[in-house]
Amino acid sequence: MKLFLVVVTACRNVRVVVSAGGSGSGTNFDKDYVADECVPIAIASHDKLRDVLKEIGFDDDTVDSIVESFEEHQYAEFQRGPITYIVHELIINI
Image (cartoon, rainbow, N blue to C red; front, side, top):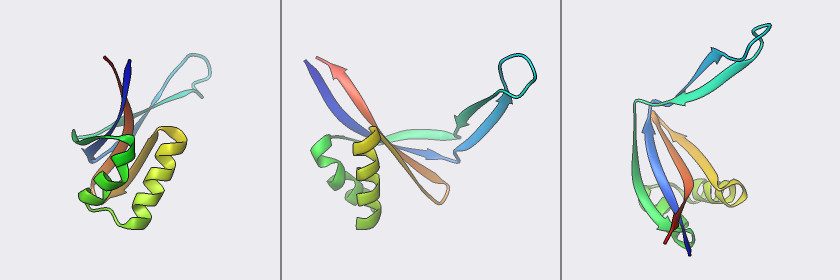
């Protein structure tokens, strides 16, 4: 049996690091995301995602946007100041 949960993680100072990758002409690049710190701040069932986002303090339009993106991709992110909130699925086999 699988348990499907949603995790909301807050990351501080997320930035993209691009480096040359592959071989050959040097036109291939690897893109990685790094952050100073990431902390999971909420874990909930799918049907409680909207409630959790409101408790964190997102307004209704932002909640709608995040939920829509998550439902489509099982991933969403939103930046507020230096904090990037990442919403992703966690599957636990029980």
